[in-house]
Length: 493
Ligand code: F6P
Image 1: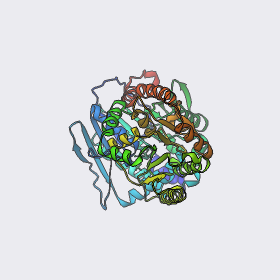
Image 2 (image 1 turned 180 degrees about the vertical axis):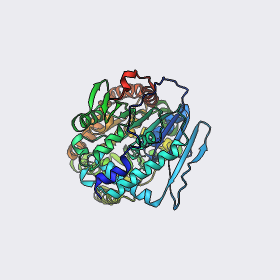
Image 3 (image 1 turned 90 degrees about the vertical axis):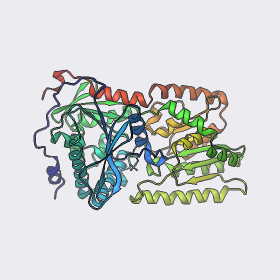
Image 4 (image 1 turned 135 degrees about the vertical axis):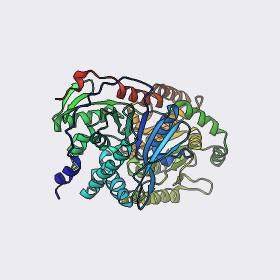
């Protein structure tokens, strides 16, 4: 069956899509319904949940609301009705996936097509029509279950690449609420997106949202470029576009961290048992830390190579620094994730085999996750953080590291220029993750950086973090989504 025919089954609307014409007010009392594929139970808070789940939980905990998504469970016959639970402030509603849904929607299309493509790794894209059909089917199922829970007064905020078709499906079920979408990953350059056989339909679905949010101006430009160049859209100015017969707004909302919470956690954990043991194990050595889901987009092999290059080129660093890389395994059912794990194990063994001494292990490589509070303590104890992804939507670890520092003795952030965070944190030591020698030099520069310069850079970065914190992110998105629109803006074309 041709891709077009396949899409036809899922894409043809029952009624033609019209601009959303209900006038709205910015009313804070409306219920916020957040939807994401990955959720995080209240007793968790671990680094393997990913930045999205940590940020959403924190954002919802401040003001309450409903969180809808995948339970994380795979069952033979999943119920069509979500399981609902309350934890005081927050209502969670979860659905299970069948084995086939999991394989086709989550592994097959979301993580073997959209993830590599959105991270500029076209060679890793494994497109199949069957997986695309699974992706569309699960989005339809989610929409049916969610629609039954929604009231017309709700504001619906959908997150990330797994759920791009959701607003389209909700509209087909006559849901008229304001629906917004936030993409946590990068949005690829227009010509890369065209690698996807169903690129046009995917973007059409994205245009079923009232508001589409991106991490950086670069992502927004890529989206605009696609719309204007390949979808015949009209740029109406001010972030508004007329595309596929309706009006869609697109804006940049850089995600932030809860700066006060991170500072408090880091300070509290600094006196805790874990950090004390870590410090004891280090002696006088400087600690360098990396915290990432074990993902090929994070540039971990190149980072290990850079550390190896540092030790090879600058022998005076031997015994002076210990590198702690925390990398909880992720998406292990995707072959590329199993491959990267093997490569890293080999690289870590090689470094320690070559440079370790009886009283110094240069690289401590851990495939496990830690409680968020302990992690903030580890970050505070670190002189350097290495955040060197090949591509990243934002990278909240970079922001958490800065917020976790002691104001009197802050550490240095070494940051990839291809992480969204680099657009804001230009006072980090910026590196190109493809330049192994450059990264080795950046580590040396950071190790030798005088206290005065460290403080200056940190103060400038903290100003940015405080201005664009998690509350600002949530509030600005919800405000923009619930803002009233002039009738002229929503008239059909
Ligand atoms: O932040 C990007 C992201 O892909 C989230 O959407 C996701 O929840 C997180 O990383 C962790 O990945 P996964 O849900 O596949 O474990």
